[in-house]
Image (cartoon, rainbow, N blue to C red):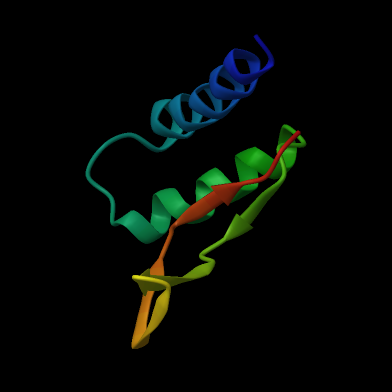
Length: 74
């Protein structure tokens, strides 16, 4: 049940950004607006964390996965 509350809060923040900003902008615009909205709603997140990629327990060299936003538990 707690997961549903968090999911609802995150989706609500994204919908608010889209409602105000509208369609047709670059991803960077939505990224920054969503960060502002998440802060406004006290939803903790990490902006653009780099995640290491592993294959059979071996870290791939020079390859990282860049995530736009990563929400933390709240």
